[in-house]
Every structure is written in structure tokens, then in C-alpha cells.
Image 1 (tube, rainbow over the protein chains, first blue to last red):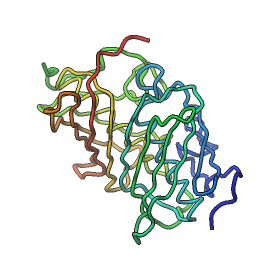
Image 2: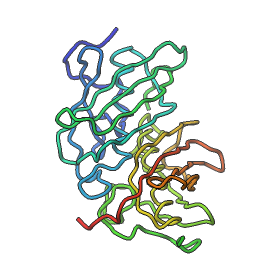
Image 3: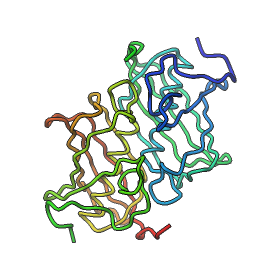
Amino acid sequence: MPAPDGVELTFPDDGGCFGCSPSNESGMRLRFRREGSRVRTDYRIPDRFHGAPGVAHGGIVATILDEVSCAAAVFLADRFVVTGELTVRYASPVPVETPLEVDAEIVAQSHPRFAEIAAHVRRDGRLLARSVGKFFYHERPSQP
Amino acid sequence: MPAPDGVELTFPDDGGCFGCSPSNESGMRLRFRREGSRVRTDYRIPDRFHGAPGVAHGGIVATILDEVSCAAAVFLADRFVVTGELTVRYASPVPVETPLEVDAEIVAQSHPRFAEIAAHVRRDGRLLARSVGKFFYHERPSQP
């Protein structure tokens, strides 16, 4: 059952994840909400995560896209997943310290073992980076 | 001209990069050396970068692979690059706080605008994750 629309969502277990844990002070602390068939997060990338000055590191952009894709599996399909393959395409530099719109949607669920999930990073509606990946189903993770 | 073999290498400009800058205390501070046709880094991923407990976040693995790929362009081909596309395949969980062997090699340079670069993360010789990407040539970045 999908999560309720428009409500702030956090992962059920707080294991200190770099992407989404409220307790990981060096992490991103991403928050999610469902908007129809998508999961969305608004995020301003801190300057410490830059590659070239002023520009988010490509790996950090990948981290955000991976994280929101996993959130889509949890909050849209009620499934925990691990990333099997992720392809990121960088269209334009992603600036740090700038409001970004990030979302993900499940594009295919026909395979019994994994979902295909697409995600996007936009600024003022303009696409800066996008990903598509295979996310393998697994059991709910145990507490540390 | 490739960098000398076996010597510790740092990027020519320290702009505070999350992946490789000695001055970014929250970053990875990766160091590189050339070994023949590869650039290599040995790295122990700090616990704060985990996703599931004990396992490196997939985006952090992507960050390491992206970073060593860019280092391969600089130290093997003397070219600065920006990441255009990166595909990461996760074969097994990458543990945190564990010595990892990371390397990258240029697999194609026939295109005038980009190089194709492959990278790997191994533990005790066993492949845990790998990537291949298109890295577009650009001018040497200016200082911030």
C-alpha cells in the first residue's frame, strides 16, 4: 500500500544511513513525501559535498538519486530494496547550496526479483541529472 | 604523459573536492598512485558513510568509482574530465571500515569528446562493485 500523499516520510528503521538518517550528522538527512505516483524530496546540497568548486560531486548526485529511488520502492510499493545497478546521466552541473527538486518513480515491476526505478534532479524545473536503476527486493533490514 | 609509477598523486588544484581534497575534513581524502596502465587507491570507507549498518551506501561506492575514474584521466592521459554518464554494478555489499582495493583504467579514447573509463572496488581480490562511464574532456578547472 503506498504511503499517504503529501506527508513527510522517513524510513521505518533508523540505522544511521548516510542518505536519510536523522541521526547521522555528517549525512544528507533526506526527507521524502509521496506525490501521486512519485516520491519527492527537496534538498539543498551542502557546500562540503562539492567536487569542482560550487558544483556537487557526481557521486553525491548519484547518492541522492540512489536514495530517492530506494525511497520510491519503500513508499510506493512497500518493498525494501538493494541497488543492483544504477546508471546516472549528468546533463548539467548540479550547484551546491541551491534548492533542488528530486523525485523518483517506479518504471517497471514486471520482474520477480527487481524493480526498475527512474529518478531526477531538477532546478527550477530544468533537468540537471537523471538515473535509472535495477533495485533488488530483499527482506526488511534488521536493526544493527 | 602519464604520472610516474608508484608515487602518491594528488590533483593539481585543491578546490576542496569531497572526493580527493586534503582540506575537506568531511570528505574522503582519496590518494592515488599509478600502477602501469591503472590508477589505484586503497581506501577504508569510514562508518559515517554507511547505508544499511556496516555496508557502504551505494552512492558512496559510486563516488569512489567516479573519483578514481577522473583520476585515471588526469594521471594516465593528462586530461581533465567531467562525468557525463556513469553505470555502477553492485555485485556484493561493500563493507565499511575494511581495506578495499580500488582501481581505474581507460578502456577507450577513440571519441574526440570523451574517454570511456572502467573502475573496480575489490576486497582481498574479490570484485564487489564496478563501473563504466563516459568522461568528457574539459579545460583545467580554474581556482575558486
